[in-house]
Amino acid sequence: MRVPVALGIWGLLLTLAWVAVAGPFAEVTSSTEPALWWQLRQHALYLSGVWSIGMMSLVMVLSLRRPWMERPLGGMDQVYRLHKWAGIAAAVAAVLHWGAKESSGWIKDIWGTAARPARDAVLSWAVDWRGVAKDFGEWAFYALLVLVILTLWQRLLPYKPWRRVHRVMPVLYVLLAFHSLALMPLSLWQLPMGALMAVLLTLGTAAALWSLAGRIGKGGNSHKAQVHAVQLLGAEAGQDPLEVLCAMPASWKGHHPGQFVFASFDGLEGPHPFTIASAPGSCGAAPDGRALLRLVIKPLGDYTRALHAALQPGQQVRIEGPYGQFDGQGACARTQVWVAGGVGITPFLALLEARQKGVIKPENLQPAHLHYCTRNAAQDPLLARLQSLCASAQPAVTLQVHDAAQGQYLRPAHLLEHGAALDIWVCGPAGLGQVIHRQARQQRGWHVHQEAFQMR
Image (cartoon, rainbow, N blue to C red; front, side):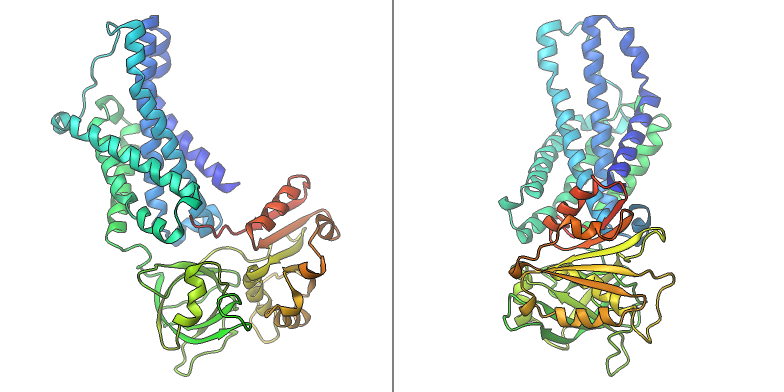
């Protein structure tokens, strides 16, 4: 719920700042009918414009994926969710803005132009730039709609070309920022609206330029690591998971079990999110003393299917992170239930390694129940290790395997056996999470935690 609440609060803040300087209510109620429609059009035009550029500014700032953003939103995956929905909200507001602009035609046909408000004064330098600013805004509007459609309708464009097209977003923002700066009337530059817009346009433009310079993910949270070892977990390359051990540099300050990183094995491909499948220190160290980090990568697309042939020990890899708050621990009054599907077991492997003898354990660990959903237990390359870790975990973690090959599917009744007050931690296919979320809406005592790795 944090993302909808954050988006709603942001939209309300933009609206209240506009109301404080626009004074729409007194103006509209005192208008005659012809003037009323022109006043409504003008207010709709400016409010929708404030919404659109305000949401776009939020999109640009969130794209920087700074670590401090995680705490209020509950993880970097939720930052990406807010980034996506703020972009959609910006596009919807832009459509409303365009509709308000185009409504002048039918208002003029019905009521005439006698009651039409005079053109608003703008910043002095912008008077000669009105036409250019309008053109920039219109071009950017159409391009923004195309990008949002390609994001939502994923079958139209695969991820790799979509990612390249998405890089035009900072350019669109700069055009929209210029459009807003040049056409925003002087009346809206009063406090608090003026101060808010000045901050948003400054931060948004700075973020856009930072992105265009290729600096996102290149700060102190980025580390030049090295592939230490690569092992195929199974017999079929391109289908079975791939285990990659990465030797981390001295700049790596460690991680918490359950976190993830963005790993870039190929500069042209860009970073991909992968869960860390090891607890801190559980993989030992490289001969030169560098800490080792384990990634377990499931071949899900063209890029990950080709990694088994592309990766070699000694190869450079850029690791950004760690991110996430998927720690498997909730309220003490609730029973902790872990649900994993397929490669979604990886964060739980790290959580289990943190419960082994001789490992420095996080404080206040609670017993947990793990439900592991697998297509075929007899051929699962991770199951034996999982069973061993659960058998020696302290505090205890009970394991129940749901083998699809034997018709042993996870049912809501399996979770209800653990009681009514549950903290449920889910990682796996989207369908698995949807089923549990749907059931949780009927169970007041269920709190569901799930990382949203769909970064598009």
